[in-house]
Length: 529
Image (cartoon, rainbow, N blue to C red; front, side, top):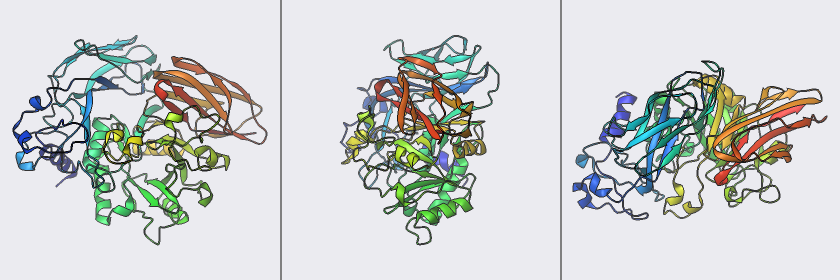
C-alpha cells in the first residue's frame, strides 16, 4: 500500500465518529456516547479564539494562503472501535500513551459560522468566508480548520490579516507578513520544529497523524519527527523514513529524516539528515554510544547535530563532555522545558520562561563563551501529538502541569526545499521564539545572523523586527552581556545601534522581549578584526 493511501486510511477510516467533551481529567469512554450526535456532545462548547497563520515573506502581488482555526477550550478526545466509526475526526487508536497522556483538541468539532476578513493597505482578497463551505484538512472533516487561497498585497511593507466573527466579536490577527518590493524575494522566512515525539517513543499519535498536524493544523513549513531512537527497531526507523519522505513536498512542506540520540551520560542530541535516508543512531549501541561516535557518523552522512535542552538537570548534558564544530551547528534556546539562554539571576528578566531545575554552566551562553559557534532555534520537544500547538500543561500526568508552551524556529532560506532549508540550518540562518512568529532580521556589515566575519573598526549593525505582539524591548548582546537596548513599545521596530569592533573578537546576538512574556532570539554573528 502506498504511503499516501495509508495516510488517508489512517486519518479517515481510523478516525472515530464522535468526540468526547468530558471534563479535564476524566478519561472515561462512555459506551452510550457512541449513539449520540456530535452536536449533542458539543452543545456547551463555544468559540474562544481565532488563530490566523500566514507566510512571513511574500512578493509584491504574489498570491498566498491564509490558515484559519476557530478555537475552543481544549478537550480530551476518545477512542471508539473502528466498526462504530462513520466519518473522520482527529480521534484514533494512538491517542493515549502508557505515560497516561491523552490527545486533546482545541478546535470546535463543527462550526458553520461566517467570518469577515480584512487586510492592511494594499490588501487584495476575499472579504468573508463561510465555514459551511468546504471541509477541514481531512476528508469529511467538519472542524473549522481551513487554508484559504487567493490573497495578495499590492504595496510593500509589513502587513497583517484580521479575521473577525461578527456574531461573537472574536478577532484573530495574523503574524506579520513582509511584502517585498519585488515579485519574487531572494530569501524567505519559514517556520518549523525539529523536535517531536510519537506513540513509538514516549508521546501519542502515529507519525502520519503528527506530520499531518504539523502541516495542516499548525501550518508549519518545516518539520522533523525525532523520536528516541533507542525505542525504535530498524523496521520502525524505515517506516519513519518512508512517512517523512511521503510528506516532503518541495514548495509546500519540508520534512527531514532524523531522530533523538538519547544518552544518560552525554545528554540528548538530535540528528538531521539532508536527504531521503540515513542510518539510525542509538546511544544503546556500543558502536554509537559516545559523542565522538555520534559526530563521526554525522560527518560521514553529512548530517546536522543539535544540542538539546542543554541547561536542564537530569539529562546528562555537559558542555565539557564534547563538541564538534563541523557537525554540531545548532542549540535549542527554548522548548517546553523553558529557556536555555542564560541562568536565573541578574539580567534574566523572564523568570516565567525559566527552566525549573537549571544545570548551571550548561546554558547556551556558556557554550558560546567556550567558543562554540552555535545557531539558536526554538523547538517543541512535543509529546502530546500537537507539534507547534502543544497543550501539555492540561494533562493529568504528574509533572506535566509545569510544562511550558512549545517554541518555534524561524529559518531564512532561498526557497522551501530540503536543500535550501538544510543549507540555511547548516549556515545558522535561524532563530528561536517562544511559539510566536516574530519577523526578525539581524546583520552586521550586511552579513546575516549565523555569519562569521572580519571587519575594520567600523560596524554597521541593523536590527529589524515586527510582530503581532507589542515589542517591549530589544537587547543587543555582546559576549554574553547586554551592551545596548531599545524599548520600542510598538509592533514594528528598526534599530541601528553603534558599536566598535573588539580587537580580540566578539559574538553578538539579539533578544526580543514581547508582550505576554514572549521572546525571540537571533543566532549570533561572530566578528573578528
